[in-house]
Image 1 (cartoon, rainbow, N blue to C red):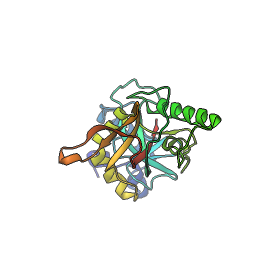
Image 2 (cartoon, rainbow, N blue to C red):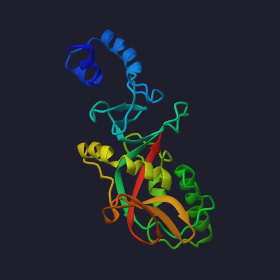
Image 3 (cartoon, rainbow, N blue to C red):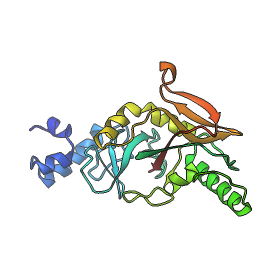
Image 4 (tube, helix red, strand yellow):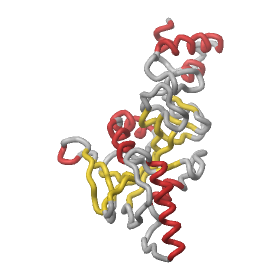
Length: 235
């Protein structure tokens, strides 16, 4: 096997098949830093540039192999093009689960088209305020709370959040590659109509992923319609 063939395979596979030694692995990592000039700021344990559709695991580990490490948390669904992005702004992981619920009647004091993390925290503040005043009449737990309490496979409560509309739009743009990865782990595919955490008064923004066969479209809808909700994690 020549260097070109080795570079096209992930070291996890090569090591398992005894096709490379640990020393060769170090040499490969140096070559890979030059081989992938696009996104060098997000790399896995071995120095490979992480890509859309890779799997994310507990401990900030990534691999194109869903069985590479324990505690698979989701699929890399978006990567920043900012080579100097700080941790927490480098990319988004979509978890393999979804729920279908109304957005709800709460009105957060803070709302952004780009920052789902802060939107989610603001929505939870509104829930607590209403609970204290006994003015929340929702039949189910708010969708933001489901995202914030998500704690599977090493995800800590508070790490997950409901994406803002522009974050969701970026994820949906990559849905073809992300869905291929989700299929391999029997995850819920990106599709249908998905709520974002961005709202506008009595309505909230959502994405209809295949509306009238024109591709994804952003709409504002009544908060009482049952649409899908996805939880994401920033890294």
